[in-house]
Length: 70
Image 1 (cartoon, rainbow, N blue to C red):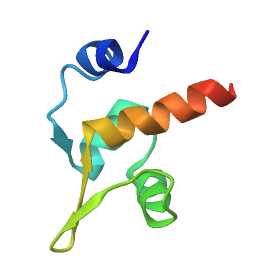
Image 2 (image 1 turned 90 degrees about the vertical axis):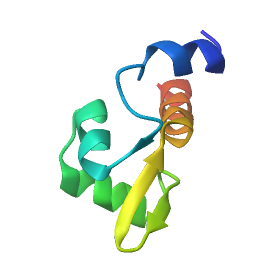
Image 3 (image 1 turned 120 degrees about the vertical axis):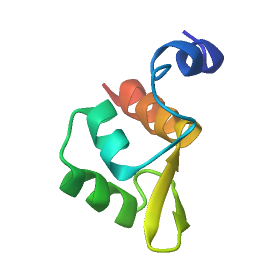
Image 4 (image 1 turned 45 degrees about the vertical axis):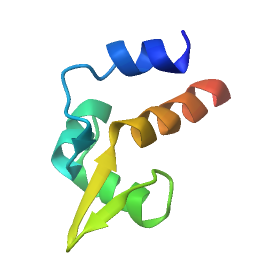
């Protein structure tokens, strides 16, 4: 599966830019874990004011890297 196919199928029910809560639901981890990944740079993000926003493209890049290691 290439990146474009993954983008259109894996997270199709999520918005283009996700909140921490949506990201935690998509990954199946707690929000605390997502905050740790954002703060240490594991997942690239944008900060809007005090809130983190995670573009779907960055989340898929994170998943692709972790899938390659598995």
